[in-house]
Length: 73
Length: 458
Image 1 (tube, rainbow over the protein chains, first blue to last red):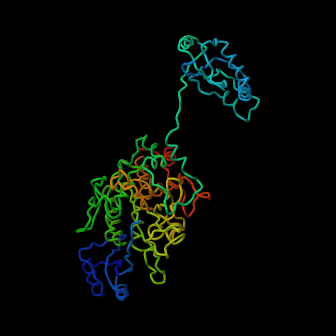
Image 2 (cartoon, each protein chain N blue to C red):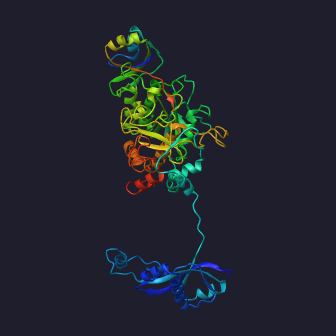
Image 3 (cartoon, each protein chain N blue to C red):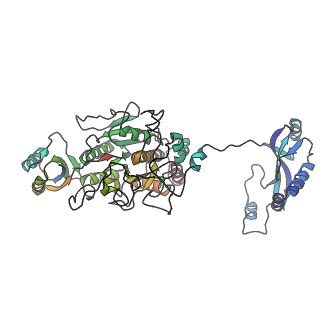
């Protein structure tokens, strides 16, 4: 499944991607992170539902949200 | 008699002019008597009065401003006062010889009595209902752009010079055809399949582009094609691109968002789904963009209870469950769909919204020949037309663009309030309702309201 991970911390994007991979997520290294407010960044990841708990438990991770499909109206 | 139709204005100072006129209206013989009296002063030869004409008193001389005496005399608070006529008007047909003769009479003025016609603009309004109704399968025929513009009242803005110029509308969608529509920029992820301006003319984004230009033909467009990977992460990235561009040069001033979800997941299974969690990053980013100064128009959705789109999941059909996610944020402008007869199109999603209950905010027009249809850029098939709340939303966004070209200082909240306060209230209740919001957007009414109290460009 696709997820959006909000993260706040001093680590670089690549360092965070490494931690996310270690937790079982797949992360596209070429996909830019999205700044959220002044302190947070958003990472787009793919991960099985079973890995979400591990991602959520990582230091600096504020939330893990679905990245759901939308359709044209 | 074959003469020239004129209005004869004959000097006649009378303190009982109103009483005389009432008597003339009541009885044909009295009208004829009064007319004969007036003509006796100038000679009636060569003058044929119009049938059923009644002399009309005039109380002010040419060029005179109404004084306090006149104003007091026509107030219902002063029945004892009566205005004194200065002249009387008689509609008549007159020979050319007699016309030349009368032109030398200081007690007579001659005015044209020209034929009037009904403006065609009234035809569109006359077919529009005010008490609601539902347009469901088979849908009523689509209408052309002229009807739509009559209904919106775009002439008032355009005649004042406001056609959306200097305004850029961002289209977050499948992509826009830049050969046909004025795409001047945008954003795509590196290596993305569709780059700004490169989409097919038949794309959903091209339809949205066409529909922005209905009311704002001088607006320009940014293309943010993300629906090729249609997930909220893509939308999030596009809204960030909007924010980046806004930070550089103050554009786009508006975004159009004709997409969303078609079902409601079980909140127990997905409590932080976009539909349930207002703190989802996408919603937070949308709020950032609006608070920066960009007005965001969102389609209500196509899952209304009467004839929902075939893509709708039963969990998301009907009142209370069909307007959700960013489309139901308080900060955005949520648009429902009506046809040219002011009937709710039966698939248009219905409030209350799942975040902000009072959704939709307004309604706008769909089912017209904009991008699709005979003679239109995307085809000639008579059965094809611009449709969905997807089409209604950019029509409203275009009205917003035209208004912003008159007053670029309007904040998103002010623009939203202006559109809501001046919308045509339809349906069987007064004020907001869950089918139409505050009513159908109207460019003329919004501009009139703004013109009276806000500074305008130029």
